[in-house]
Image 1 (cartoon, rainbow, N blue to C red):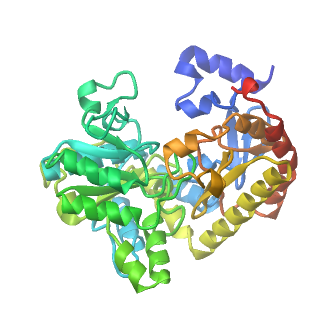
Image 2 (cartoon, rainbow, N blue to C red):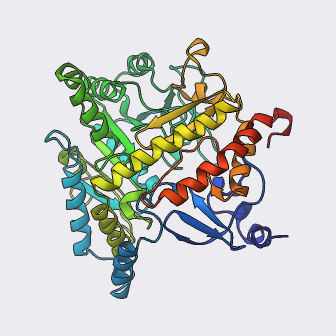
Image 3 (cartoon, rainbow, N blue to C red):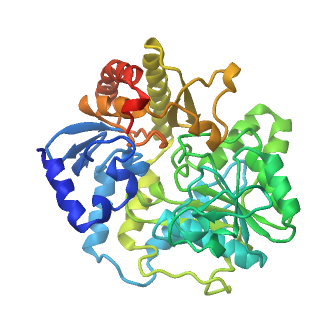
Length: 459
């Protein structure tokens, strides 16, 4: 029995399921979750002293690598002056100004004002409340497979049709709350238009991940986000773009700017038809440098609807916590152009190498990319079979049984992957030649394990 086994048994006595976030339980891949005790650069170490090359990166924040010395120093300095004050600090304004200056493209910025909170769930929950308060409407549109945190409004599953509002997707969510959310298929603009036609004057906002990264990575169709903005505004609603995962990860200014630059490069026609400015953007993960910190920002007239200026209430003792803010400022300051160039190059190399290894043993699959975020779907996604996934339904039809075998082979070889096929892979600036070499060396055996996997043996 390993130390990880012992710790998991112990945790299950005091903690529901032995974990404080469900994916950590390894339910979708099987086996005993690793209890991590330290991390440095591109590596994490578990309670048995085993070191792994890490491709989870704390689900995104470790963009510079774990325990970057300058970030750690900033945190230690802030902590030495006090852990929490319950009052305003200069660092909050400094971080807000840094984000406003950073999130620009072509001289345009969607962030005129920003409110700091503690978690991505709190950011999206507040953004929805703000949109409802600003528009005076109640109904929300979200997309199947998109995850925006675990607040009640967002834990809804699709009803029987566009005319039918959502049903609770979790125990404890009142039916009346879920019924205020329309769950539509991703990348389907006709469904969005029909929803507005069927519910005139009732829809407050559309919320969408800038690029879907919680059902595996599924990028939006070209112009999809811009069309959402146009449809929302034509109908008096707002567009909320969730960049909790993509913000400051795929581009210094997030996926919105990555899209904007691609459109500008494609020429004036593409830029004119595909340009958009979201009304509210939510951030998490990297904005706090690995500490509990998140934010929502957007148009000044919308943001000023928040208390104390406006009627929409939001508060938090730990909002803008000085230690978390220090980590965020240090991380964003250090995440320069060279960091993003390294992330892009590393993501390209690794995604291509995994694909090659799988192809070599005859495992049908598709590589999914959104900037330097990537994932894989197992199955026939060739053009003749319908092509790469564009929606949650497309992702769900994959041969998910192949991933647990692939995952555990990589883990046994010292590489830590996300413990679910429905998660994105994350690289960092600390993934150097040695770390990449260890990943590449583990791929052939993992690909063979995936090829040998059977649905009857699936978790």
